Length: 129
View 1 (cartoon, rainbow, N blue to C red):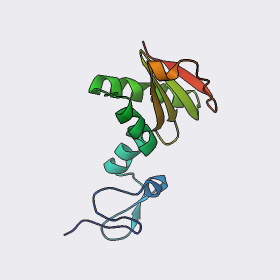
View 2: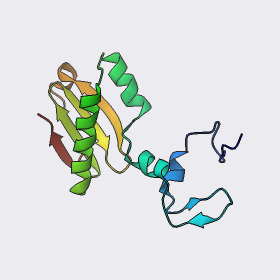
View 3: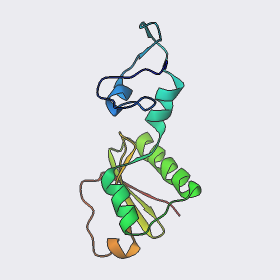
């Protein structure tokens, strides 16, 4: 039972998103250190899906494989390098709106759902071939 539990957390092992914004981590003895833990770095760089996006993927029968997730993650990195905040990521029959700062897929559409749609509140687009 050495797992730490933070306020606003119902179980151990997963950090609350607000915890990821801290610049310093806290050691087991309670003192802060200047280095960032591996877990914190991993959490910051991991692609996440909002509840809405997960629901849309399920409703539309879209399943993403490891290769596709890697391509999306790479597209998010490219958009972040250019200073994007909200990006449209287009793959063959898939469109994703991604919050670049949070590395979170906000919504997803398949080919038939994105026809005749207008994408708003984005500042960039990344096309994956």
